[in-house]
Length: 559
Image 1 (cartoon, rainbow, N blue to C red):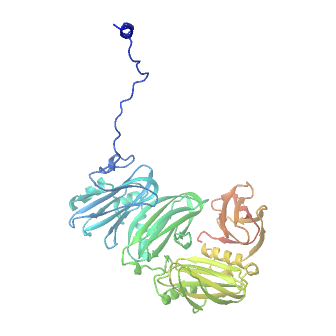
Image 2: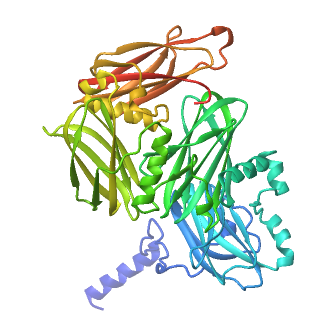
Image 3: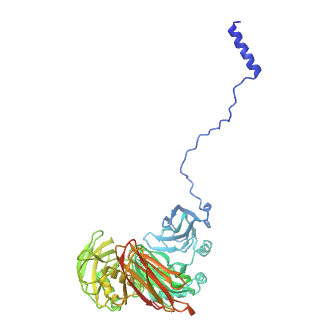
């Protein structure tokens, strides 16, 4: 045996004797599994597993989506003509308010549940169209929404309505009376006074506080009207109800009938509005009962006092006649239109106006198919004198004499506009010395419903405001009365701040900030032995100096 072979043999023998082997790994290698491919799930979400969703019953799932406030989930459902159907929508626990609406293929409303909860339900029985569009709308909150339905025989409709907690929609239903004793009778009397035919839309309890307004949104379907009735509890006094369009412009104010307030708002196109509710004094509840007009009954509504239109419905002669009737009650003499314009979107049309002394009321009266007006009044030197906007009409007050130019444009849809002017000579001189502030002050008082004519404004005070200096104005509110305080500015300031402070305690009673004007209302109800309310109004401009006009109006409980 060679020396080399002897050496290898000896090495092999030593390794065997020493137990020589490969070193074990410190950590076991993991068992690798090839990853699964991602794919779209074929099985839909099960609404019964969504956290917070109430009973889905035996309903068939039609649609399920996630969304935020304002989003909609819809489904088109075919229903046998001889059967009823229960339609439901259910939201996850992060959704605070969910509405459900049903329409026929022709757009006719078949029902709605807009109560403040996340479990709306509808029962639709013959006669009904063969196909029904269901729309669930998130009114408040965010989360998952499921829409479902169940076919029901007409003989079992009452049991199905109870099982799915379908809310009664007809006045006089015992369930309604149990929830709000006496409310149905009040609604029926109010509807008889208003005219037309209505069906219940929603009823909700509003928490009210005299220090801040409460807002209730509503939707008006195309060609329909919404009637709002607001009934306060004994804890609050004398409601103010203002109707605002989707741009925050004031459409009108509800009128009083006893303690309640009511108003009808109509629109030729679908639009969003809101009701701003605020009591003069106290903190408590009010019932808001909203109703929708039955299609075709809108012409039967007596709109002399309570009807407000978001956009014009009639032609120019009918709209001018309505304005003349309204102004006649305010003491204005009939006047023919001084000019007519055809407004276009995004392009201003102009007309020259020769104004006399004092202030002149300028009404821009739109006619169908106009949708929205934006108007501005300029002096011959290019200074802004007045500005305003509206859905179908706009009212400006031009203070001071001279030759001025009125510019106007359509906002959403073109159409004709007529211009009617009424001069009011007997106004305080402060309104003409500061014509822009004077216009803003009068316009605000008129819009808030506390002034009918510019020449009835009473005493007006002129002030100089700065951003770093408070200007204080003392006021006194007699027992069981209210005081309206309005201030308007002109100049370089970005806005005006108003604070109302009780004189003895330095307690802030109210505050407001506005770009061109601000308002406050102080009331002295239920003070008993304390007597009248003594307060001071603190004013300052924002970011720069401004000239201001301030006026106060003493109001009775009926105002």
